[in-house]
Image (tube, rainbow, N blue to C red; front, top):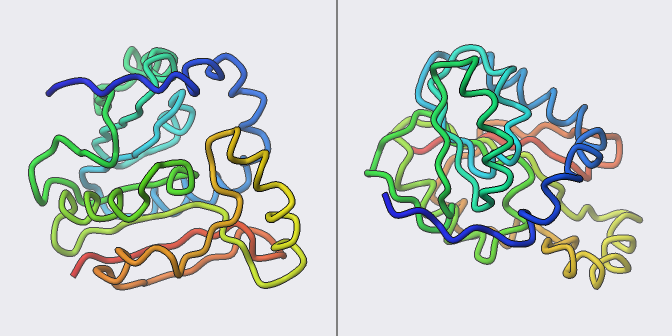
Length: 199
């Protein structure tokens, strides 16, 4: 497989990412619990980052991809401890895998930082097996006071390479899937864990 061009922004922040992770700990714990409750299978995590989730997955053969080589180099420490992990530098909007390869695809805090979320979802649909599960963990702008905070923060968010104003309704490629669960991760309905089935 031809390696992806490394993402310079995430290469630069790779040494500081450990300071960001505590803000997502409770959400990530929900994600890990959900993943571990699923039957054994082949799992693709897009945006594996520094690999912090890898030590907690119990049941699956895991392929982790990221566009940042600096992040992947940190994740490689887990390769010494676990035989069921493969790490590849790859862009989720151009997955270099055959059709119908994975039982599960995980998108943790990824879909709002890619250039084309619907292209990403179309690629996910292609590589998921029929009956496979897509899990998305992400913020979605709710219809409450937080939407004003998202609007205020949006100019700064663009400098940090993500969309603070982000709606599930804009993810038209999700129409290919069947939603099977919608879990709110906080009292304001800002972060959600969404599960979809490929029919």
